[in-house]
Image (cartoon, one colour):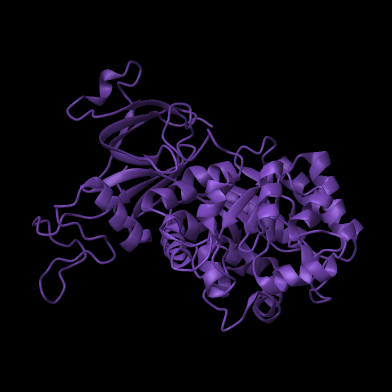
Length: 471
């Protein structure tokens, strides 16, 4: 890949650590022909961009007023095939929801035209919301899973794409015929990604046993063997709600816990992503930490399906690696910005509960949820040091955020004034000019949406831009 050298000029914001939000109000970031950050200049107001040797003729991209650059979001858990059901879950809990809404929808992806229509939409939608990396669950179908990988590659989104494996507790019309076919079909999807992206530069396969209840011991063991022999990462669900945990206890009577089920199967490793983790015991959290497996926190889904409120502060304090996931369609939106809000609100509900999980210390801050959505997510998917921040040598996975003109600045409304003549910019965060930069970022997290995402890049390539964006 060869790109044009580009210097991104303006404020930039990223997380240096869990608690530290680094805000540079006047910066320059140079991105080379390979999409990597070559230099970072701080407090560079008034300095000509041509001061860097060899960058005299580089392209320049500038933010607008109240705009800033921010790392691309990393969605560590999303069911691409469930996108048509986003916001549709009635009064269901997890197991009822699967049978009522999810399995019938996913089974229909034997129709490749339908699969293409949905997958193109969800990839475009997530990109427009600043998600530069996504861990996708597809369906049991090999052609549809491979199609999702193709679409992600063609749109330039960094993605982990997994064919779902399950051989019980699902409709007979929608499950693996046998353990052997599950391994064969999973391998076929791995081989397809190797053909289109041999080094997994942008697209990676990911082994995807749906969750323990839908897999026999033999199926889990086979997936564990496939993981061990190929080194391909794993994604699955764990301890999402109490009924599911009880079901696992009944189905796997010789295992000491839900986590132990995966450990026995060889599926609990540093390359394992465990979604939800709401009801883990202390012993399970210790085992997950020992095996260096990772957690995807999905607060919107956990709330929508009344699964529970995950004690994220406890997990972080105990040294677990945590990122955020939208879990569409258990979650109602593909927006990672909305997921940041939901993570904050869930942590406040945890803080209001009695017992050792509650208390003021349980609350997550704006800086912390942004960390989970970027650097935390990078650690979860094994790409720390490559994406999630703005440092020399990292890849330019980034979004340009436009908060709009300051209220009362006299710039008016390029979409037309409202009936009161206030010059409101619909959908944009309202900045009144008295806010400091931390307050502007907080307003973006709490009141922003995809209309604030002016442009998005993956590995230096522009993959989404609003009509108003001028490169």
